[in-house]
Amino acid sequence: MSEYDVVVIGGGAAGLSGAVALARSRRTVLVVDAGQPRNAPASGVHNYLGREGARPADLLADGRAELVGYGGEVVHGVVTAARREDDGTVRVSLDGDREVSARRLLVTTGLVDELPDLPGLAERWGRDVLHCPFCHGWEVRDQAVGILATGPNAVHQALLFRQLSQDVVFFRHTGPGLAPEQAEQLAALGVRMVDGEVTGVEVTGDRLTGVRLVTGEVVPRAALVVAPRFTARAGVLESLGVSAVDQEMGGSVVGSAVPADPTGATSVPGVWVAGNVSDLSAQVVVSAAAGMRAGAMINADLVAEDARRAVAAQRGVAA
Image (cartoon, rainbow, N blue to C red; front, side, top):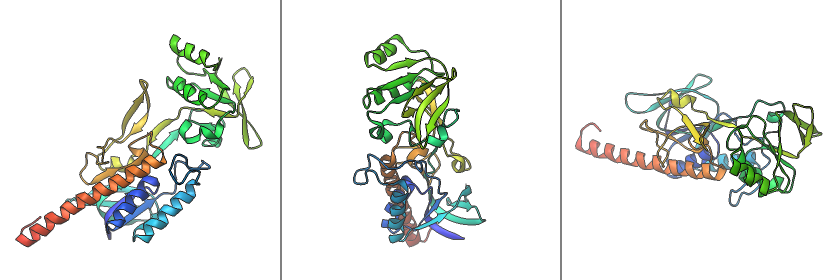
């Protein structure tokens, strides 16, 4: 069985950044990547200084090349289980019956965007069905934007996208009633209200062109803003005794994330997390930074352990 200082589960920005930091510190590192990046549908990465507009696949390919250049390894696969051994190491099982051993584990498996249950949204996700103005707002500036209200945070989304376009329509759909001050804000900003439930979107060619109501009416729109539920991919962590917890925003549960301290350390010794699995609001650049920080902290933890072992060996006692 192969043994590594660190096994990283997840080969996105967080995982690769952490792995590069570790490899540059001469740690043996294996990244296990299932090849399912959250931002795969997007045409470009934004707000990443120096890589503005880079294709997500290109950014990851460059990251893998950098890691390999420092001696790290990347394999395509799925981690099916992980368990702590009596000596503190973690045994990681991959599909294909391969097992590897790690002194430390960094989990960067991200999250799943669970979209509202409406026909056509999934096919347009990341292109003209959106949720984040910092990810895609510039790309839909001055266009006809719709806000699909499914929870209390829809008003906040409307205010953010109103900054980018003067043509914003608020679809009440299944959202809660508006407080008087919210209705006043939206009216003052010229956001038009549309009552009735939405049943789907209209697409012409390869572009979203409208939002269809239960009455059959189609309201012309070029983009639709929705509020997904952000669910942490925490299955492998649960086998180690670490569970995701609900995350609230505006008094409403918007998803789940794995608790960790500011360095990414979880409640289980030797297990770290970084990126969207522990921070559902993190964009790519934030995830990369979190991965790098976790990698540095893991290396520091290993340095301390190496020193303890060296002292114990010199004294002739067990570490």
